[in-house]
Length: 485
Image 1 (cartoon, rainbow, N blue to C red):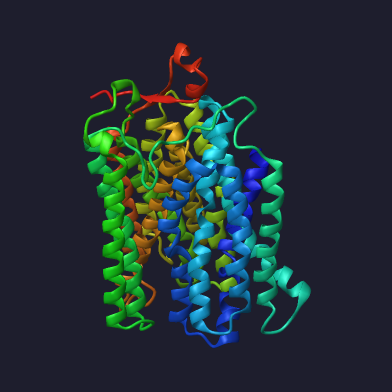
Image 2 (cartoon, rainbow, N blue to C red):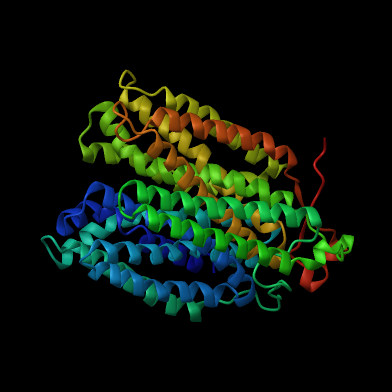
């Protein structure tokens, strides 16, 4: 099951990231400007934010087998539209819809959690996340040769993009018949409420409402950035912002509607779970995965400009950040399983990330290239091991709503990517035509240090007592202890 689900995640990321390897070819073929190409890349990320939340809700009710298979089969539709597109508008619309495919990550988190025990969840989630994420690198390395095997010339990219969607859809059918939601005899727990995460206290309802704000705000920021580069006008931006305000109101209304029992104080103590882990882990993932998203995309240009490298050499140097994910993310999960305190592992990796990004902010042409690459590798290990350690804790918060919690945390990873990339966007000036990377690295360091401090309020998950574990429906539940002061 782990290998089959990891392959599903891998293929979903191949499709989600199949634009980047062909961006230059697409720009030349369809006569697109750098601003238009940047907009397409941004649209690839935008809808993944709400999609991960929505997919998390569907996941807890439909189960991972049908939902993952459905996402992979669905991917072939917008992917084929993108591959056959001849206009910028069609490219943007197809890419927006393809962002939904990036939500597949959430599905596998719950699937893997259903099949493995508490004491090994970090290791298996790390393997799933690390090797699945490698789909983005595989797209960059494998799709161009695949395209050239079928065609040459300006339109060759269409083969590479189109075939990746076909392969994902075919595997979706295979996945539907090859796996089960749970091991034989186990029960797939579902929440009672539909439409929002079910929480169990008044303070948790307030916290969940607050968590909706960055989801809507990040989409508003994406719309503003699109307006700034002239893709849409000011009136269209106002319409989008109004629509997002309505969407935000809908989210808040659903939170209140689903959680009326919590507002009424109807939950008994044994049925309650702590909401603090959802908040802290979401913010932590915004730092670690958000930093990964933006740094992976900027490193080739950063190395080219800093060390005067040719683009191929700069790309090879920058790829060091992506390739460490194969080992670092599983390593973070394994460290979480082996350590006496999962919380301290997260704190240590966030502190290491902060220190390494402060060091990266000082990287310049005066440094030896090997030292620069080495520092990038160190930073990537901390960031990506942090991803693994965070998602070693996410599935342990509450089993029956595990998909929704993973969806919220996963969406915050994309929110972090939008926020960090906006630091570059708003720092563009004559001295920094591509944005101020030193400022970006310092902002990432400050964010990592701040969340490390917030982890003081992150409870420590522990296995439940044996007598409770003997109850079938509670066999995989985990309790979060209070944090010692």
